[in-house]
Image (cartoon, rainbow, N blue to C red; front, side, top):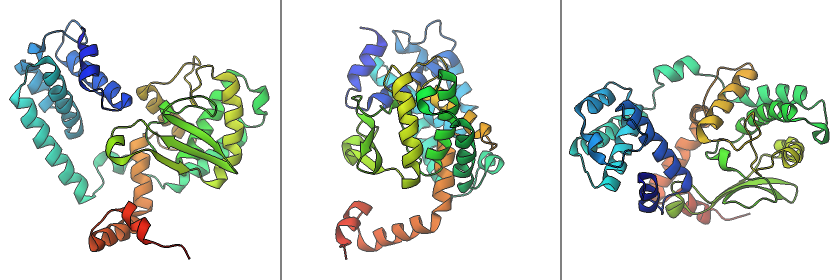
Length: 298
């Protein structure tokens, strides 16, 4: 059995997207180790001193990600390397300390923009991209509409895993679903699904019309059944989706940013609401789900 098969079997309880992300990071680590293959069958390469030193030179977030991947890989290999576990714990603590301080990083300062500008940019792009009806879109037209729709969507919502989202009528754990009067997103395959359960949320009403039009075009042109597509009309990978979103923000006249940064922008725009909710949770001693149960309807 190959390492990839062993890894998938050992992590079968994780969301498929998480397993794919781990394998991608292990592959990155393997390249850093200058291995001749992406996934060597023997785990001795994880003990290379040069590899550990190379990872130590990388930014904190990257160190944390690679150290965690090394630990996950070492368990599958049966070749545990204590230095990776130590680095994983240390980098995680350091990363959490920085996040708890809630100060903008150098990168965030350079790319910072008002969250409301994302939706506004989407409106302008959509106006230009939707001069044709979806019934007449070519694959090129769909790609332009896709950039605009991404800005509209991320200007109101900032979920993860949108590269795995299936179109209405196509089966999949993560779906865009038509509802009475609008649409909702259902996420049933993600990293913390075991503890959090299936997540779903309604799309903002202003997205109903563009979503309906975009879905019409995507259903006709995306033979794979996923909401978003690459330039060749194929399913997007996680990395290619990230690049697509970054290019979409640039096309909208904004600084090119990732989904993670958009989540930061939205959270910052809603900081007062978030902090008040946190204070209430601390006071009452339970989470937001239980708070919602206490909040009776009028």
